[in-house]
Image (tube, rainbow, N blue to C red):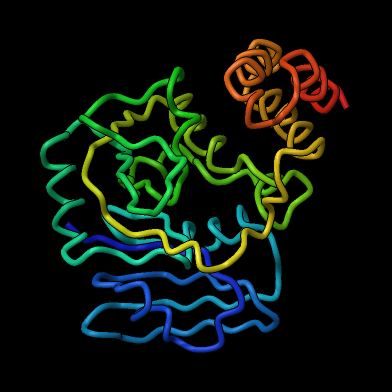
Length: 254
């Protein structure tokens, strides 16, 4: 089983990221910078493809790597992650133990985590997929490519709508009938050493983008999705439920 890491990176000037991230498998580094260059080489016995393109947008960046991937199992990654030793064995074992899984979500190790920590193996469906980001996702490449699943390039850092590309990817997987599971094993540490390219807090822009995201997910149910978000997270937004809901609806209708 060939494991391959697909890294969305920015402003890399050399190949030091491979050691920094503790890459122990084949990998594709999709590096958005100010030059255009494609490099193929071996590193510690692994096949590496380094894509450096003068363009922006995390969905585009991940798609650049995804369309060139050739592993059996691929992982999405960000450039501020450090993989644990033996991560390939952890991932391969997870797919062997869950043979029906097309996509598996893992845990990330981080300080003061606000992410949902997986406590036991469970199936991921429409009621819980929104809690998971793609930097903790591994998938069977054949299953994803057979259904023509790629990232929406209108969402995520570097685009007009600053987040949500990972939610839309998992939503597309579910709509195409792929089986998604979550397992409690950790595969990497998130360093958080660089500021986010899009996270400016939970202001009006964030809420409007959230409304647009929900309408993109479902034109039929977006109002309900906005409402549940406002109820669950209005404390983080530091505003009342009704104001948060109205702001998301304003974005969705705009």
